[in-house]
Each structure stands twice: as C-alpha cells, then as structure tokens.
Image 1 (cartoon, one colour):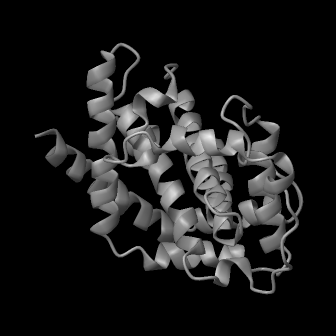
Image 2: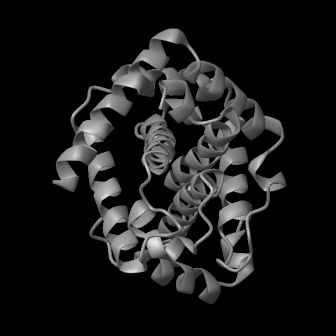
Amino acid sequence: MSAEAVKPPASLVGQAVVCGIAVAATRFVPVPLLDDAIHLRATQVAVVRTLRAGGRSYPSRQVAALYEGADAGGVFHEAMKYVRSVPRRVILFPVRKYVKIFGAVKGVPTDVMKVVLLSRAVHRALAQGYLSDQTEEDRRKDEARLVRRAYDEALQGMDLRLLSAAIADGLSQGRKLTPAAVKFARNTFGKPEDEKVTDAELKPQGEVGESVERVEEALARPEIQVILERFDTEFDRELGKQKH
C-alpha cells in the first residue's frame, strides 16, 4: 500500500484539529472534573471519526484504550456519568475573560498535536488491517491497546517541537480564540455520551473555524509533512515491536 493511500483524508485531519482544540480548551475550563470529561469526550470523538472513516462500525467502547490510554480502564464512562450528574447551568456557567493568546499558552499546541497524531496513528493501523469488524471482540481490545502503546512510544521517541510550533502559529492569530474555544468545547463536548456530536458541530464557524483552517494550512507545509511521515515510520516500527 502506498504512502498516499495510508495518508488520512483532509476532512479527517480537520476533524482531528477541531477535537484537538477542544481538548486544549479544557485547560481553561474552571469546573473540576468537567475538564477531564470534555478532554476524554473530544478525544473519543476524534477516534470514532477515524474508525468510521476506516469503515469500522463497532461501538467505540470496544476499543476504548485508543482514547482512554492503554492502561486507563474505563475512565471515559466514569467521566460521562459525571457529565450526566452536573446541571447544564453549571457546565455553561460564564467564566472569566481570557487575556492570553490561546496558542501561546504552554501545553495548548501539544494538546492539539497529540489528537492529530492519534487520529493519524489509528488511521494508519486501520489501513494495515488492525481493529477489523471481523476480529473477535477480546482480540480487538488487545489490538487497541497495542495501537495505543505504539502511538505513545512513537510520541515519546521523537522531537516534535517543530510540529508543535507550527500548530502554535496557527492558533496565535488573536485573543478572541480562547473564549471562543472554551465555549465551543463546553457546548459540543460537555454533554452526555448519548447526545451525539454532529457533522455540523465539527465544522465550527467564527474564531474556532478560522483557527482550524490555519492549523490545517500549517500541517500541509512541506517541512511539516516530512515530520508527519517520520512519525508514521516511527509508529509503524513501534507497532511491529508491540505485536511481537
């Protein structure tokens, strides 16, 4: 299979960036535990969209290790129970005005980068036949842990500062993004799991949508594509090691 065939489609990259911005916005959510719930939900949605783009139809809970972490063990559904227990008025409670530029806040570009690379890694694993609909459920769960560990190891084994800096450039165009990102994250991902995130919600308008476009443009730069391809190689290597 050619590299182009494995390369994720632009629409999937865009959705991963949207989810990554929501994950990063949880750094500014002042409600304890709600930030973790939104973080997990946005990561789960990025994974689910990747699975569906790869033709997989099983419930995401069967591969929860992909978005919870290889050794997390059910934290997502505990977080969703918390969301159901929190009154909507608390979730949407007005928060202070933000003065810091979103992309300049420590950790924010890395948050976005991790979701983009997770979606990319899952997409690559699917193209190699992992996590198939035809695979027995227990084996699929084991494969999900293998894929997640390979992603974690690839992430740790590379210098991704240039990639993070490119994403930061796309997120640092104005001060209005921070409150817009927080509002978007709470409205879109701060709701129970049975309230689906729609296609329209993953195509945000305004400051968030404009920032998504800028990050997509940054990711398309030739020098950044080289880094992404190196990540692919490192992920493939780690996946082979995990398998054996």
